[in-house]
Image (cartoon, rainbow, N blue to C red; front, side):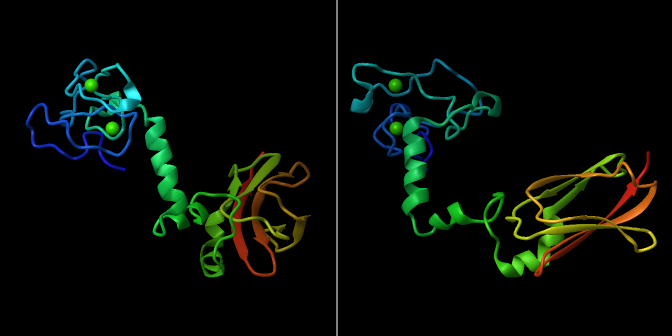
Length: 196
Ligand SMILES: [Ca+2]
Ligand SMILES: [Ca+2]
């Protein structure tokens, strides 16, 4: 997406002949200078989108160079332009199916083997009566959980974990425990303390 002043910034005033290819962002002769001048109107020749209206520069737009505190919005036209690129541009279409930051997308097997321990969050630690086990960035497929005490004895077992799971620890004594989350392909080990 282009800057709202269409990168046509020669510091000359009144230069309003470039476009960011978005109709609902008013034409703008130059970038804002890290300020928040909400009344500046550097161009009066607007796209037909605006009809007879001559809006001021959209200094609230993230694609200006306003002060950070001033920037609060993208326009609907910018949103449509972003979607258009994300949906059709060969270099960007893969972003929609990237595993980064999305819970319900199966990650590549190699990455999954390497980083699975980072996808499992066990808290609080130390724990009291309840332990939460969260699975992130990975669709739980036949994931199981086993909790072992410091003598290596299995004291708790859960099957078919979901993204968010709660384990009742009320009958377990204080001490160190190992939480194992696994299926036939991956394996995560977490150490916790129970302190009541
Ligand atoms: Ca525009
Ligand atoms: Ca204007």
